[in-house]
Length: 246
Image (cartoon, rainbow, N blue to C red; front, side):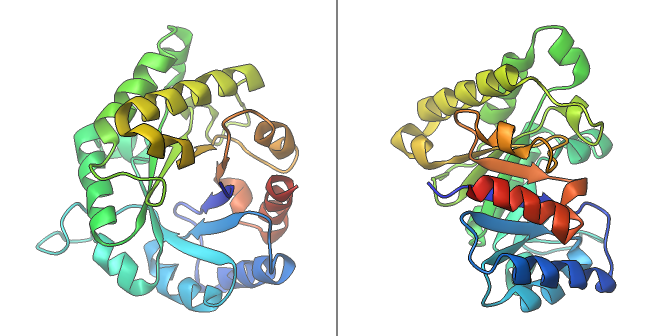
């Protein structure tokens, strides 16, 4: 399978940030992996236009489970698709924590993404307390079971493992801990969707940066990364793309 370097800009970026996108495209016209940037919804259409014809794909950071309706402030999967997005992140830990999103809601959003022709990037991950209590595999297994959309295939699903305690903290699990979770998720996926599981890309996310990317990408069953802060600058994200392409 082709590896994936995905960047989640979160609530960062304005129109002037397009220069970072242009620099990334110029520096990596034919990367050895897939590249995806998920900017704020206000920039999806503009960035999709800039990226058109390049190796870079643009995605959304969230979507509503309904295609339309009286949902002030929300963005639907068909709207993202219409704006030029190819992917959408669902179930990020910040959405689960800050907005109380449940596995059932994440699953509904992922199914809405698939129905709109988008690739769903489903996020799962344990908190520090859950890790310390030895519940990591139980937690991520339950989240995967509850969040996986019906009709998931290798072509329309990406799973991102992001230990909550490692996001934006500078801390990362050991390579052995990452390997344990990714192997567990691969086996769990196989039990859920059969042979398709072999082609589903499993991303690691949580303080991925140029200095640690290569060693993380060498871990078995790690098929790429979901990158936060380091995706905001073309130089930093480009170094991660290069490490994944090596």
